[in-house]
Image (tube, rainbow, N blue to C red; front, side, top):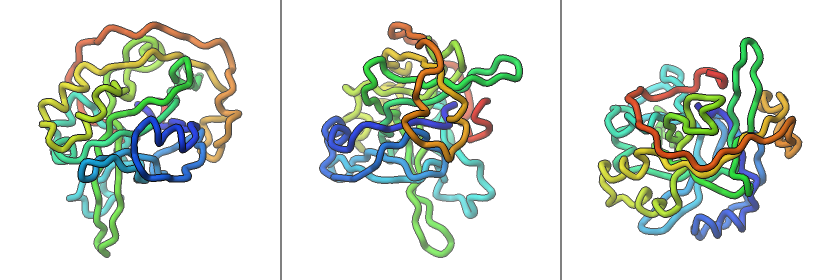
Length: 246
């Protein structure tokens, strides 16, 4: 699963890449964590919009978030059919911009953090689902979670799951409300993964309070692999927060 990621791309470049008209001043973030506000791209009456949402999906029917697991990742294999996500998969699909994410590789009792990114450091997007949760007092909170899949190489060397990276050619169709759930599932089945590299970094990323460019300083040589061939998907269940190292 993915429990931390980063966006350091300047707002003007991100705006041009995703084609929204909003001009947000979202500062560079090097260690975005669950429950924090995160940038999300949605489609509103045919126009792309930049909005901030809480990273942690809450279905509309939940009465008290304290009684519901913190869902930051949703399995792409089952999202279309799970009651918690079925409505969002049909009507509330989004993109979560990123330029890196982090995973931890466990060897015995040692957990080594890796930064995973495109070799050129460029932007990409996770397909995501969002939902507006209304509290008993009437206040509204927009919430979001990214879709994950079985990890292909090179990510599979350190973790069995990974966020899906959506082909930019499919961004429009993924966001479009007229895209059927069946077609939306086909856009991410099997997941399309960009060429990625794994860069070992220091354990400073383990602390949410640490959020600076020094977190991304390499602690060793990068591990790279060419774009992997699609892998057969397997059934699974949706993911919650759990441990960052699960």
